[in-house]
Length: 117
Image 1 (cartoon, rainbow, N blue to C red):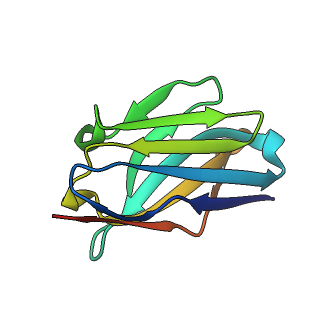
Image 2: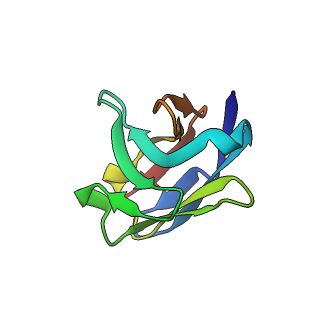
């Protein structure tokens, strides 16, 4: 089992920045890819960014150039640096960690990000 705890959400004005953290505990040796998802009210959960264990990253188009995903394998933590935030970035942000041998995904409880205009 893997437990994920997100932190760093909050209220920020448009153009501002936030840094989200997701700390993993438990069977962390089984984790490969770690992702950030988000879900806005009335919308489906969407994949925002992905990072492999070796640091390969991908982003959804709407956040490219503004968000940066990174991870510290020694601390079992993944980060999402969010700059130039927009009201449309408002959502609950979730961390996901996948097991390397079957892609089963563990989820955190989510952290609210609200961007005011």
